[in-house]
Amino acid sequence: MVRPMVPELMVQQQIDGAWQHMVGVMMLNRARGVVVKKVLPEFLKRWPTPEKYLRSRSATVQRILHPLGFYRRREEAIRKMSQDFLNWDGQDANDLYGIGRYGSDSYRIFFNHEYDIHPLDKELRAYLEGIGYPQPNL
Image (cartoon, rainbow, N blue to C red; front, side, top):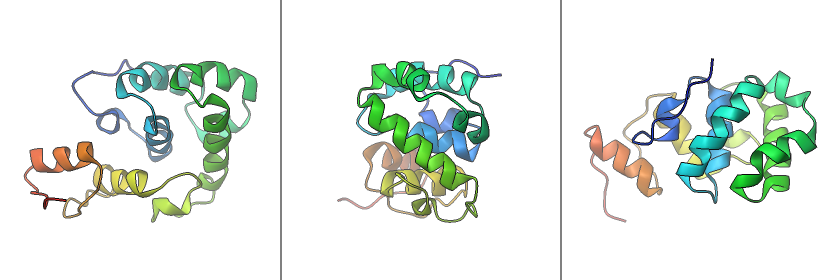
């Protein structure tokens, strides 16, 4: 069951699976977290796995993604990432379509529990600082 997202926590802190995490970070690209926290639970309720998502209709997905903006591009990118995910070895998130530095750093922190890294994203940096891993000034 998909639960509502808590405003005080990062999206990544509220995601259980690696595919769901990748979908979440892709939604966070060029979108406000408050909007993602409304859209993502509905998305994951309809499509909890990449297999179910890949059987979805693009038009239906685009309606769900519409509040985030760039909904056609997002739908296409999530679809390509989901296809990659089915054969992914779970190591380097950069191997997945549309997952860049932010998504890769996020995966390393929240799934691989690698905390001695230096992400560029201010929210990831603040999270690491908050759990006791100081970040150098950029």
